[in-house]
Length: 119
Figure 1: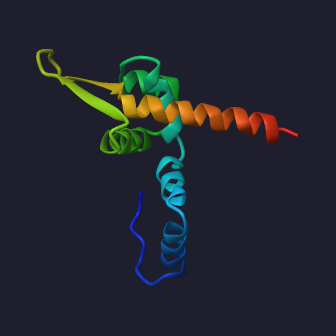
Figure 2: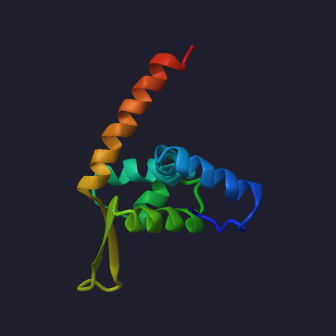
């Protein structure tokens, strides 16, 4: 999760109860931070550098873009590739097979939403 919860708070208790009731709640919480799936989708269109992603999302702050990329790397949805032979150091992001599999599910969810929620 993106921020620490204070133990014993009602929010922490609710998250624990939802997690125990169904693991899907954990999955939804992990993929739902703002911009996370949009960044994953853009990386899926080809290996990207930070500046390319920043250009694709001009209203997204550098801090949040960096945070989302770190989360995607930690989740093993994106690989971070450091090309040391270039000066300055060049960092590229590339989607993993796990990330591609998730995007298929997200695409199906999107189609379901268009069909049933666009009334």
